[in-house]
Length: 95
Image (cartoon, helix red, strand yellow):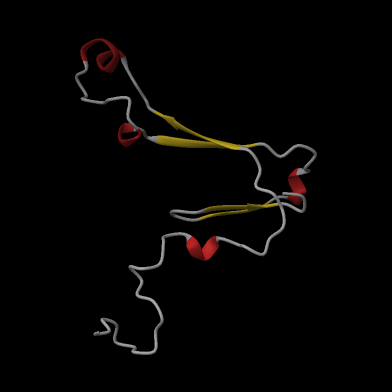
């Protein structure tokens, strides 16, 4: 058994840890709110009728992502939002 890392005291390699797992909070008792992830494309007539830009309806061809989170009975001032490259962390007192 060989350790690939330079530090032999490490428990896991970075490849073994799922991406984003450092943001999972298993001790947080609040329920996860209902949310939707919507993908948007900027489409013109050349796309709709002729397919000239080679866009397809898949998420790979989307330019924008909209995330809708339902937070009933929550004030805007109570929301803490942290957006990073691959993680959106939204926290409120209730959810």
